[in-house]
Image 1 (cartoon, rainbow, N blue to C red):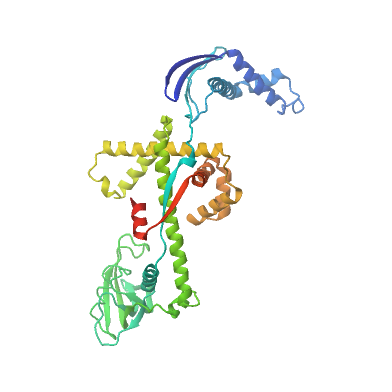
Image 2 (cartoon, rainbow, N blue to C red):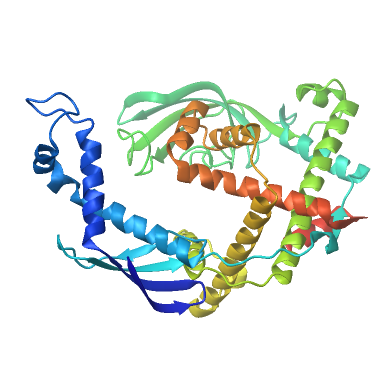
Amino acid sequence: MQVKELKSKGLVKEFEVVVLSADLEKAIDKELHKIANKVKIDGFRPGKAPMDVVRKRFEDQIIGDALQEAVAASVNSLVDEQKMKLALQPKIKLDKFERGKDITYQVELEAMPEIKPVDFATLKLQKLKAEPTDEAVAETLKQIAETHKVSQKIADDRAARLGDIVTINFDGTVDGVAHKGMKADNYELELGSKSFIDTFEDQIVGLKVGAKKDVKVKFPENYGAKELAGKDAVFAIELKQIGQKVVPDANDDLAKKMGFDSLDALKTAIKEHLEKEYNQLAKMHLKRKLLDKLDEMHKFPLPPTLVDMEFDAIWKRLEENRKHGMVDEDEKGKSEDVLKKEYREIAERRVKLALLLAEVGNANKLAITKEELNRAVYAESMKYRTNIKDVMNFYKNNPQALDQLKAPLLEDKAISFILELAEVEDKVVPIDELTKSVEE
């Protein structure tokens, strides 16, 4: 093998490599011997066919594999000689190949940077913490009561209005023909909820209990039932009752409806839930502050292709969001060049921190346990509402996807490891201050 360095820039080096034709012939012979040991050819016992017969039959078929093996072996040798730890697979360019001639190709190698983590014991961080107050518990209890509104019959003889809960009988037809789902008795409908098509609810407004009316509507063109899409319909309705939504009192009855023994038990559960929520916010804030410190305290070159890949992924998501009308307020009015510069900086930060945390994990032999991985797989199955066995088989058959699942778990483990070494001071603050800090 002959090697000539073509160019070098930062972590990227490009070489021209010449593999002698004799080395390729050795690789071809190696592949043929593998075949000869197991192939069955008519007239010979399995694995007993002469090499000249095997060569005649299979040589043309295995040249490609032998060429790939010879090039791969030369690349591995080159990487060892250069003492490089690669960030990505080598980029190989082979213009042409002629049997009997030396193989000349170009290869680009992108190395991992040398990373020297700081002494994490020197890190000083402040962890903001918040504790649930009686007022926070009371406010949450009020919100729960709001979501458990009940319909209560109105006492006075007035007409229905928006916001009322009306009980109706209805019987609908299209061109005089009844269809499935167009008839019901004692159906509760909130006027103004837009849960019925077109102007159905608006036409009930103003009616009193006992009133009967033909409500005329038109099904949308994209309606799920094709036989009704775009069709005019008539619903004969009878108004049976008018009610209003009433917020129930926060008492033992409400607690029991939610599966608790008493109001005190419900309040205790609310407080525990708020504590978990506040702790999660505190962890998010501390993690962000730690990552900011790590970003600030470490300087090393980044593999350009990794940065490009991260930036492309970010930009693709941004463009996809734009197609659906989702644009952050602080991005409106910014030129594409400005946005690309900002997002490239974000990509660089993400790559830097990912490499640093990976180095911390490797250096300290941090690993994901089988139990932790199973929990992550289970969470994925719940996220997509998929059978857990199917999800497990997917990751078993897709190592790259499994690596992507492990990556954030390993990063979190590395962050926990660093925080155990760092000096972390707790500071109790109001929840508003903690929430604002997380948002910022």
